[in-house]
Image 1 (cartoon, one colour):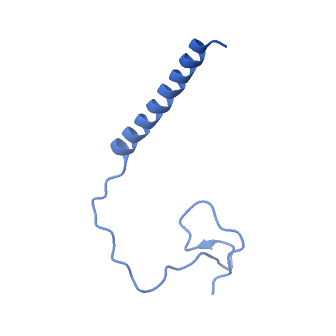
Image 2 (cartoon, rainbow, N blue to C red):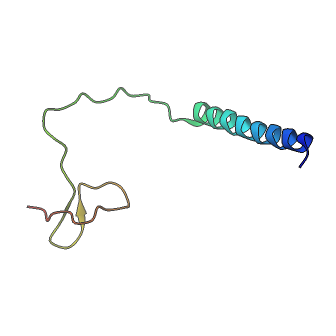
Image 3 (cartoon, one colour):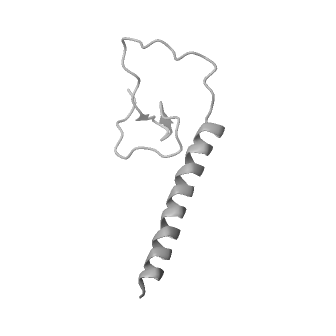
Length: 74
């Protein structure tokens, strides 16, 4: 490998990294969701934890993936 080839490969690598960083920051600024409502005030009570109901359905868990070994609901 010649020194010229090493310099060319390194410069291409550097250009790809810089372009990836710039495009990521552009996308973050351009398409980030805007917060139009203020954040709710924190409450003193803790958030309800995920639990499994008697029929096997999940309660207090808004996401599609569910935690393993969650307790049964009271």
